[in-house]
Image (cartoon, rainbow, N blue to C red; front, side, top):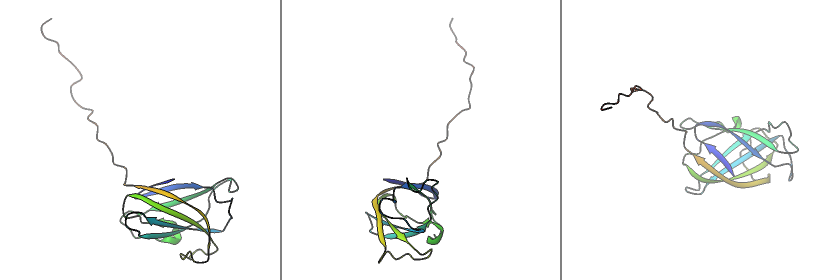
Length: 130
């Protein structure tokens, strides 16, 4: 399972070498809720590509994504499906005719919210009656 946080650069690690390798990889994301489809092209940045493949996919939030720059816009939170294809082009976002290397589930979460903690106040306590 891949976890994606919206409006963040996300590190994605998968094992694709068992089924093939490529210069570029096409990621296809399909929403289980809306059935909307999003594509992105990424290059492997792993130091050990024969063991695992590592990608940085940036979920752009409200901005407009550029698929060739590993950017995606997954509009709704929840469960998505992902498919990774071996791609020979840095601009092709059509999986027709490409070899699928892996598929799985993606959990999309909203942006991390900061929690405000109260740290002020009186730290000296007075006890009456003793």
